[in-house]
Image 1 (tube, rainbow, N blue to C red):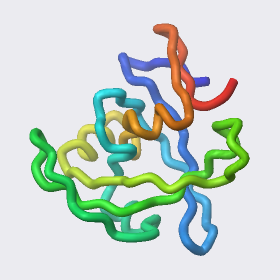
Image 2: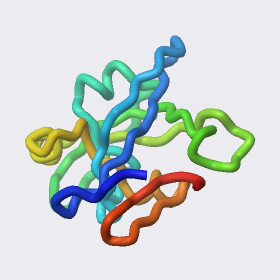
Image 3: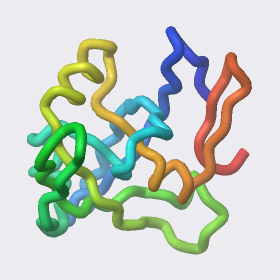
Image 4: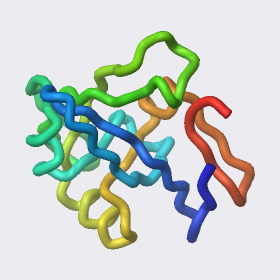
Length: 128
């Protein structure tokens, strides 16, 4: 569980590289984001499993991305330990996230998969 700070709901997400290196990122939960993740291009390059077809966002234009692996066994009651999601890069969103002390954005597809909630003071992702 995390405290909501200045209207932002933070979460920590652990990603895995193909080689098994675990990397935890502090992200802003954003239920308005249609991508599972918006990450820095360097993070995507380091974490990517496979390139994906660029997405054409009506607001942000062309978004390049890759599939990334997330450690979910601590977040869900699923028997799976890891799950692939698609992460995209958008400079303006990353600049905004980093200016507030975050590494990127966790969007609605990820939040729906693991479960999320909040009560105005606290927020959480995954199982309680």
